[in-house]
Amino acid sequence: MQCRLSWSCLALSAGIGMLAASAASATEILPLSEVHTGAKGVGRTVFEGSKVEEFQVTILGVLENMGPRQSMILARLEGGPLEKTGVMAGMSGSPVFIDGKLIGAVAYAFPFSKEAIAGVTPIGEMIDATRAEAPRASATRAFAFRPRLARPLDRASLIKTMQRPFEMLFPSGPSAGPSAVGGMPMSALPVPLVFSGFAPRTFEWARGVFSGLGFAPMMGTQAKELAGSPAVSFEPGAPIGITLIEGDMDMSATGTITHIDGDRVYAFGHPFFNLGPTQFPMRKAFVHTVFPNLYVSSKLASPVGEPVGTIEQDRNTAIAGRLGKPPRMIPITVTLETSRGQQRQYTFRMVDDELFSPLLAYVSLLSVLQGNERNFGTSTPSSPSRTGARWSSRTCSRTSSPPPRPPPWWRRPWRTSCRTTSSR
Amino acid sequence: MAAPLAYLMSNDFEPVKVEKLDVSVTSYETNQSATLERAWVERTGPVRAGSDVEVKLLFRTYRGDTVSETVPLKLPANARPGTYSLVIADAPTLTTMEQREMRQNFLPNDLDQLIRAINSLRSNNHLYLRLLRADDGAIVAGEFLQSLPPSVLSVMGTAQGDNVLPTRTASVWEHDLHTDYAIAGSRTLTLALER
Image 1 (tube, rainbow over the protein chains, first blue to last red):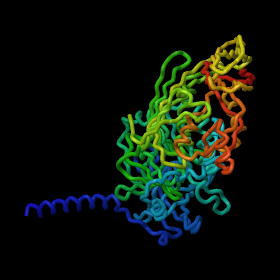
Image 2: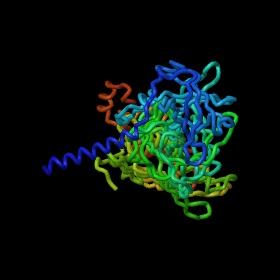
Image 3: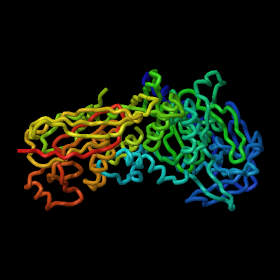
Image 4: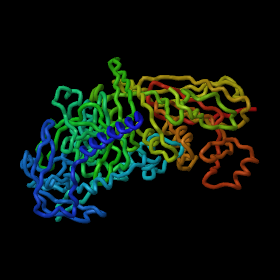
């Protein structure tokens, strides 16, 4: 009897858990086939602070087969500051509802448009594209990055390996989605990328690089300065932050949450960078203000607090993540002995991503140097050329000098000693 | 830092989990560069196997000061008599010379080889000294095998393909000189080893 009772309790508590989960996913979805021209609805986003506000939506039409089995809903947006700003960067993912049912996310816009006309990505396509549970396979992206390097390896050719993926993938930036509607250029809303703690000169350089990659880089404030701000919500319509670097420097992209289904979070309605499987920290965010701009206006937002989960999928029609455990990041420590004899140490963490990590490592190191040394005149940075490398699956260490020479008739490069156990 | 990281993380062999990056940088508000102006071998008697000679180097810094260095060269006891080339070169020059001899693309066979290649990247504040002699060798599966016996070369000759590349020089002595400057320049000296 006692046993039966405890099983009943367990079943009851499981039921409560399921109820909570179903409450979180209570949002009804309107199939694309039921979205008609002229229908009126509402959208949700944060224009300032952390309050989710509504704006009006009028459906202008459904554009089918804009891409391979991809459709888009064309809609006019009104309300709030939209008359002055138009559709703005940072609204990517703002959910649109008709009769209380979710139809999709604001994701595309016409630059220089005189009206706030947006492309809405259907929610069905967002869920479908990000439905994947398999972890990232090794060398998933490596095939495209293999340049032909001379032997022996030299630094100049190695630098090509870092530049090549970006050049190959996006010679003029990742212009995701349809390129033109009715002869007008239409593009995915740029993703605001907020830099804080970076040297202004480094930011100017990085702005050129990241703009070319489809982001809207801007200088901002660091999340910890917002500790006294009102409680920030994490719900459809609220901003979402994706952190690339955190710590003494912070670099985060922001967009809007479209849908939360249990612990599953959907956002953007277009790719972050279309990386496929990812492990990026997902955070709440706070919108400081909006910048009206003739080309595309933008929200200025900063992530707030600790990561609330992990962005696991970055696909053509959405990004998706899971609430809970944040991903592992790569810790970086930069110790700089300045030309004035001072010692400065910077600690931060960056995402573990084969495409972005090298670029982020470069930008952050450049910022440390440019932030501490003069802008004009000669300067020589010096760094020990030999550094230790340690992997988790295998441990490798390098000798600081070559071992005693082998017999002269048998020359081999000195060995990196490796063993399979991890070490600290 | 970024380029080796890019190559390592996008390798084709196995996933690499980078645990941490520690970077130490010292910055100077001066131009810490120098060019190799002269190089010569100072000796008092005939150069023989096992003998010691001194390699003298003279650098000129950015502001025109001269800096001299002496590198002791101990000739291997089993070095054969003949003509040797002493190559003294900065990192890019030596790498270019080796690339010209190897005429091969860098295609690592496994992660160990890739890591070795990255670890072997040369620094611009080092001057590299190599004592070379004409000798047959081969690069096999990316590994440099020098002074191979004729029998081994003969076997390899029959199996020549992309994986086996003959080489014509062998290094009998190597030294990497660490300096406080970014070094540019190269010199090649000729040493005649007497019996």
